[in-house]
Image 1 (cartoon, rainbow, N blue to C red):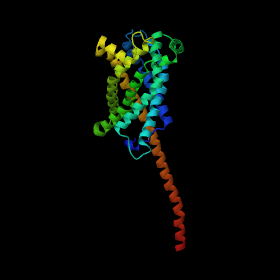
Image 2: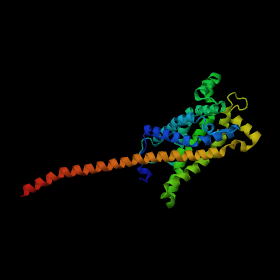
Image 3: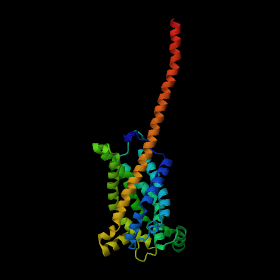
Length: 306
């Protein structure tokens, strides 16, 4: 296994898309009950009473989170290359890694905002995906699908900065400063994911709570906009109301950060290993070719001397 970050081969845009899609779908399917629990706490509605209820909306959530995570992975790679400006001799600073991830998250909100809206409304209306979409568009138009968009942009920028930026940065620092963790990369990844996931949960949860309230109230009867929603929650329930459902979301973020980090690292390690193998084979082939060209020369020289 390659241990030096400088020797790791970067994924292409297409590879980032594939890895991101797989990681996003995997973590969503594993954690859909946690998402449902969070939605119920934030909206103040009863918990599901059967197993299918806990997984209601998993198809739309996993099926659309996959391309969203793929978009985040792809744009993260694109922005990192842009920051390097073609200079492959240097590595990105920690701040640049986090900034690129935040930018990728903000871009992904274009897709993620209506996805979250559909998931919340599907669970609330108890309709399938098609009927939920049709009902929302008929009553609120296409623009209604982007209710809570600004909150989603802020949330995704901070969230992606966490799992594609802060988590690997923390993990790398832990491995670099601890002999114990250097020999136990899995433990370092878990610690890095949990630290970044917890911080991301604390900083984004008020925004996420406001976004969920907005998207559950399509008519704007109670919740008008992001800041108005946060102000109302604060005045009626105190700061605790902004952190309603934080525990399941923190668990979800830590799990998501770990899964996505491990999937990406596995892909990078695999590609790096294959690149090194090809390099060794090429080197061996070159050496063999060099020997073949030198042997006849030596033989000819001996014949002339005799």
